[in-house]
Image 1: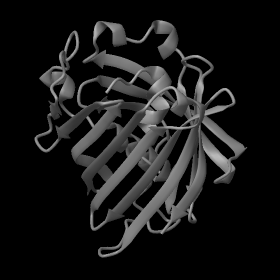
Image 2: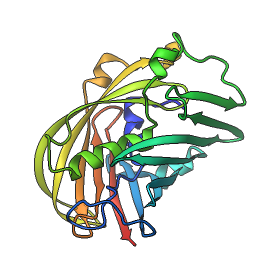
Image 3: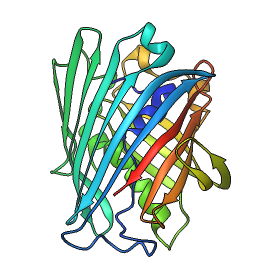
Image 4: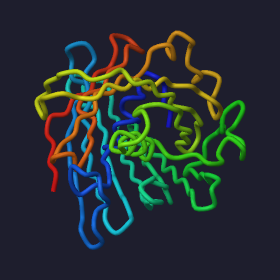
Length: 269
């Protein structure tokens, strides 16, 4: 799965970020109770819709799971047949999310590839079918894959940092491995801002995530320095009296015209 900076919003938002809280106090969901979220996002370049993202996420009994479907839509659907289905399962170590497994299926035209990653040993173990012709130059080493998380859990980590009362939200670096490529998301807080989308309106926390490629990239996939200088800006909003923190907008100037993702519908159950 190629994750160039212009596509980072899609990679990040395939994980609807939610905090494992039952209410505004941020307390863990009581055993036997379930917090479930569904959301739909639209992706646009300039004024043209080019994609759609549908996400479901659930936390219950010290476990979390999420799945997402990304597909070309609008103008882009006239020129490409592209979709990704991704999913993650993991556990809550205290309130910190730890993935057990992550996987995605990428379809481009008649080509289909399934990628699976196990995290149970502390070192991400990837597999792909059909196999990649190259694991990158250089490939992600065992040291690179140690202590990493998947792209979906990365946004959950960010959400949890926003829910916690202690510490500065949206700071530090998240080590991400997507099954081939290893990169960091380096976080910077940008305060708050009033925004409005079709699915949500109000004051949102603003967070910049800078994309830092590490390993696992083929030569033609290494981002140009100018591309990585533009962050992914996330607007993350509390819903359900603070039971969840959800990205309601994302934007990056990387790529032609930049990419914007906005929430169209959000349901908290």
